[in-house]
Each structure stands twice: as C-alpha cells, then as structure tokens.
Length: 263
Image 1 (cartoon, one colour):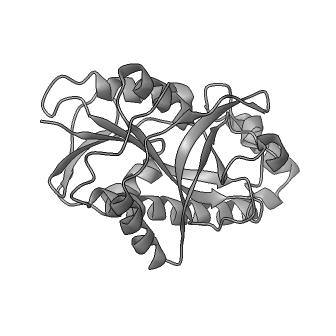
Image 2 (cartoon, rainbow, N blue to C red):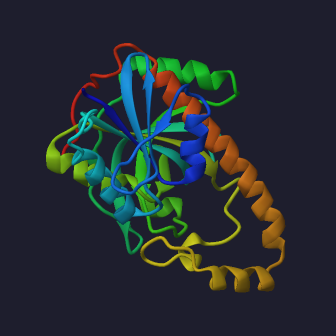
C-alpha cells in the first residue's frame, strides 16, 4: 500500500493538521510521534520530527525505511510555519517553495529545486485560504539555524522564507529519488518580528537554551508581551498551513506531483 509522508517539526503544527482530519490513529514509526489517516482515498503518514535540519532528515529517513504496510511513502511533504524576510507577506499567508537553499554563515548556498505542486492542489489551497483572508504564493525556502537574516543577504530570491528543516528533508528525498514538496505559513516577519534572535537561544542542534532565554527576558521584560503576540501568530500560521495542506491533499489527482526533486 503506497502512502504520502508528512513531516511537521513541532507538535503545534501536527496537532493543527490532526484537528482537520477524521479517524486518525497513532502508530509506531521509529520512536517518533506518528499518525496514520486517510484523505480522499490516500494513505497519509504523519510524523513530528522536532526542530532542525538533523531531526528533519532523520525523520525523513525513518519514514522512507518503513517496510511494513503501509510501506515507505512515494512522496514527502514538509509543512508548518516560517518567517518572512520581506514585508509583502502577511501573517497566515502560505508559501509553496519551488526551491530551497541552506544558509551557512549568513551566505545562502546553491538552490535545490523541489517538486512543483499540481495546479489543482494550488487552486484548492488558494480558495481555502481566501476564506480566512490569507493568500498563497510561490517562493523559496531558506533553511537556517534560527538566526535572523537580512533581505540584502538573499539576493533576488522569490518570496524568501526562513525555516529550519526543508534543506535536510530535500537532501534525503534527492538521495532516494522521490518527489518532495514543502508548504509553509508565515508566522513572523519584518512587520511582526520574533522578539529575540532564535540563534542566540538555540544551540547548533536546534535545542532551546533555557537559561540563556531566561537571562534575555530578565534583561528585556518587554519580550514577554511580544511573545504573546508571537504565540498568537504561530497559531494562525499553523492553522493556515494545515488548512491549505488538507485542501491540497483532498484533490483526487494529488498523488502524482509533476516532476521530482533534484540533488
């Protein structure tokens, strides 16, 4: 039995998706929080990887090594929230990245193309988002370690967004030669920035340095108020990402995306 593999980094992202589907069931997949559900006749396997490139890549490999029914996915999709670099995107807008690059020491690496979303899936997601006053765009995923990035560092990339997992999954998908899609909703950006630099409160493996964050809050207590806004925006983005994804997956012809990712 073929399946589609879905990877969310955070529990909040996976939970938003599970609220929209029926009869999901938790299943064992390599020790990860994992679920199975069916949508428009398609078998969907969802795992929550944890944040960061390493965890996302490991989750992808775990899914692709599955050898019990339903078998390893024939398609991978990364979904969740991301930050906008430019001010032309609103909170809750959704980006379908057509390519990904990894940021190394503030320098973007080469672009890796991702599989294109089928036209019917894009249209369904667009209509679902319009009901919530949000929009769909084609863009570029920029995988970082959490640090803020200036627009000037990214050259002429189309609608660049900052996230922490896509490049890792793209590499694994390219290694085995299966299509990989990405979908991200905007949770922050120039008009609603994260009140602290994630790179300063996370280590190289995307673990939160709690002590450092607490010290930052003590020095800057206004962060607490700004964090409430950030949490609200995260909820909007996670919900919109899930809504767009379900709308796209509900298309009967979704299972055969046009093209494959390239290494």
